[in-house]
Image 1 (tube, rainbow, N blue to C red):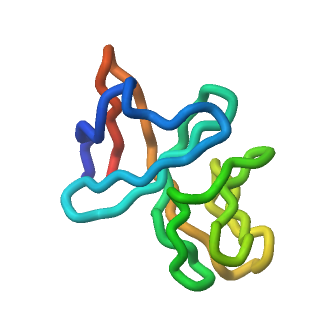
Image 2: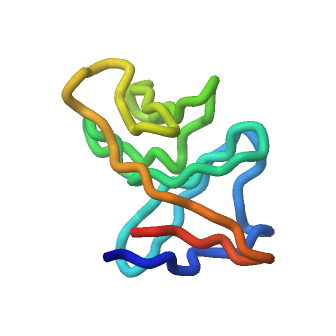
Length: 102
């Protein structure tokens, strides 16, 4: 069973409305900040592999910078395809540490 692992510190999280790329144990994640709440998703767009952590956050979705595909921050489901999506991971903050469950 996966445990929570330290990903980063609170000061390194993206600002509201932005996303950032992080790596943990060789796994690349997109951390997206929607109005002060952060979400963790796979960093690679299910459409063409674009870097979601370089995209923008818009109304509860991360928008891929390559082709504009959108993925829901809570479910990872795509707006453009019923069969494509990205994995979403549980994220929590303890003190100054940001932990993710991979």
